[in-house]
Length: 299
Image 1 (cartoon, one colour):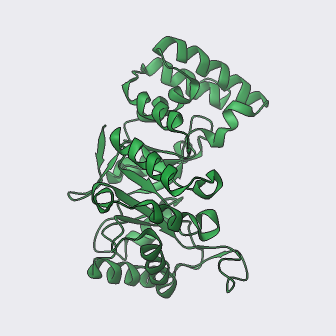
Image 2 (spheres, one colour; image 1 turned 180 degrees about the vertical axis):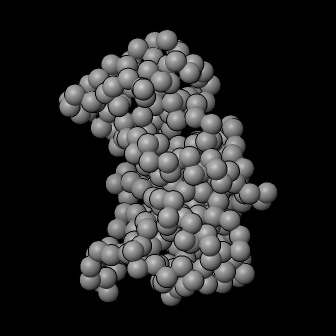
């Protein structure tokens, strides 16, 4: 399995397993453990979480499956905080909003550590840009968590350049990643310069929804149909088993060292993402997919 170095002390598996839908899979503890061990055997050592996933339940479900202490030692846990949602599991939350103040971040991390049955988080991300963020206060929370050893590295998710620059200006150490929506179907972060910023900073981005949330397989709109046709052509050309592998390979081909997050509980879906690492995509094929998604030729 390829790995991507984010710092001298932190590297992630090139394919990350996302736990957003873990509660929906209705797996037993033994089934979750089997899924984790399957991924680990194939080199997937990085697991992506957020405090709010599964209405605040996914972290605990995952933590309950880590019955073998040796598993935690071999994996990297990424989690996120900063979004507040209404949930029966958090009766005090009265509305959907963002909160990146010091008290909330530290409290969220303490709860995540308890849920995940661990004493440290490898990588903590601010989940969404908060228009009321006080970067000095957010930085204070990061510093306290880092000094205590409870969080080893920090990053963001869904940040644009001004938001990234603002928070980074208050930190004495670098943010190590930006988790973004990236796929051949959704080009926003390619087109608005966000990926270019990652390259400029030498920061490898993580890609959520790399298969466009599955819409590429189901949607009947003109764009989806057009792109699906192109993906099928490239699939045959490069010997992929499915267009999902082609979509992963398209992201992996980019020089920004994009790290796709697989959000499926099916072992075969995880295997498809891993197998895409062995595919070779020519530049012409990459551009054919790009122009098909855009709906027009490049200038």
